[in-house]
Image (spheres, rainbow, N blue to C red):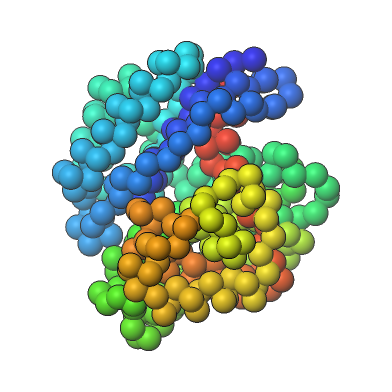
Length: 304
């Protein structure tokens, strides 16, 4: 077994997984998994740059993660950075800070690489020969991957819960025009994704990341976030649509009072839920299978 650490730094959150991985079988034993909302992508869609306060929040989380990695004795680390750092003019500043803290250089991966890691992490423990459409709804981008054991087609498009919230939402709750603008951006992005990925030809839709898992927690009526209940939960299209309608009519304080709602997701969950609902509509999927295993698991497996 090889003890590894995988770090996924996205637009909204930075996450750590420390695990023992068997390189022969691909079996992964989780030791520590945690997430911190740092909103690295704050303002990137508008300015093209990483904000100083966003960088400091991210570096503070990196320092916390460095302590965990040292305590657990992970010998190999892979740090993957996704949408926000791909888009930013000053990403070299981000890279230098991470190297100083963790001793490894963050890999600013392409959307295609992000899709590959997400697919590997999400489907590694699924059985059967069904063809899967895996969707990873992030803060700045969403990845679409179709395949079974291997990726057949993948595409990353620039829609995410943070990007679309910053672009379109000024009111709480959002106005009908703001919601329509979000939906229009999502539909345009789905048109782009469909040029590469057959969105309507999969047997199973698998949904990843915080927007999806939060919607699942709301559907299940959980008194607190419980990953064991959420992992592999099946949500019908009607259930997802009902959560969207609930969120659209709620204020910031009402959303914050939902027991499974992370404080860092309160202001962006509406856009995230709308993206999921539009994907289900376009793909024709009657339900979505929710996975707590995602790009982090794919990163950890790749290290070993």
